[in-house]
Image (cartoon, rainbow, N blue to C red; front, side, top):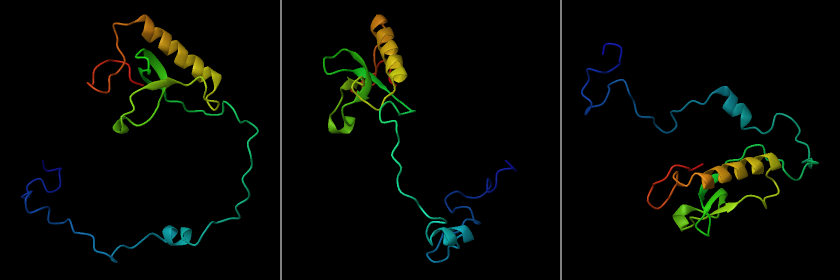
Amino acid sequence: NEFTIGWDKDKKKGVPFKKKKEKGNVKHPEWVKWASRGPCCDIGEVVRSPTVEGYRNKNEFTIGFGLDGKPEVGFRYGRFAEGFKGVGCADQCPNIPEVALQAARCVKDFIVGHQSLECWGMDNHTGVWRQ
């Protein structure tokens, strides 16, 4: 306890060395003032990439149930908070690389072959496979 600062202080009164921040009392580091002046160099025009399909290098697929009620690996159709629960296959997304789509298909085939391990059910928070 002797290594924890303020361990012996009354928690309701607060630790005495803590102070509230007051407006106008904050001193910004020098680099913040410098950065607020604008860019440090000329900014060129946007250069179009020659790769327009399969360029996405990070893919997080959702594992859930499709609109037909069968297991699916892909992307959710919308936000769960707005009532969207279905997951759609990502095969028609042109920005997903083929190797990622193959991995999603392999996971789906595995899940379908192991029906005892259910997909995650967002309604009742049950199941195994989620993402």
